[in-house]
Image (cartoon, rainbow, N blue to C red; front, side, top):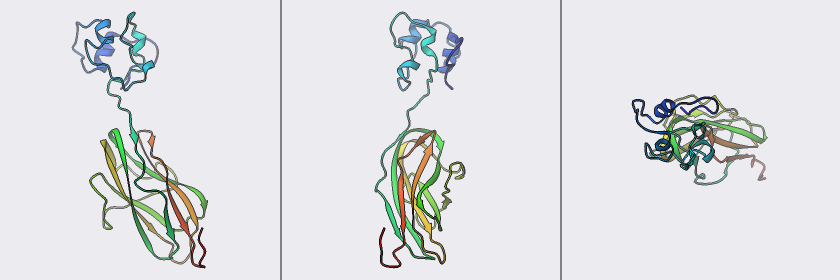
Length: 204
């Protein structure tokens, strides 16, 4: 939990933030220049002491000793195109790297770019390799907050996603959507799924 962004903070507040509640002897100088504890430079420069005199308590405003910067890489492949096949089921794999998370729950959702969605999209995830067809698949909705809390990512690694698309039992589909994953406020680049109706021999 970060220190306050304004107002009064004390040496004891800083001790607590750094996990040294029982420390009694460190000076503001020792805390500010790293003698007492190494300053976490993942904090923006405005949210941590600069290590130089004169030292001030206000340099610790918003300081978070446990802060890690989260980020994603890029998807292992680009757009996935799915031809219309009413009643059919399509699977495809994509993976993406992640860095700096701390057991953060993921939310998977999509935004519709064009067309009409007729089928159902779901995904199975793993951090140790691509899931198979019999894995647990969770529905991907068109808004955030509906994926549940069962899946989280921790530290750095690779998130392996196997997407499953069950097409409408009788209707052809033409749609284009962007799939995203968000965790700890950090959102992946978009992954495009393009459904096209080639029943008449045409392509999008």
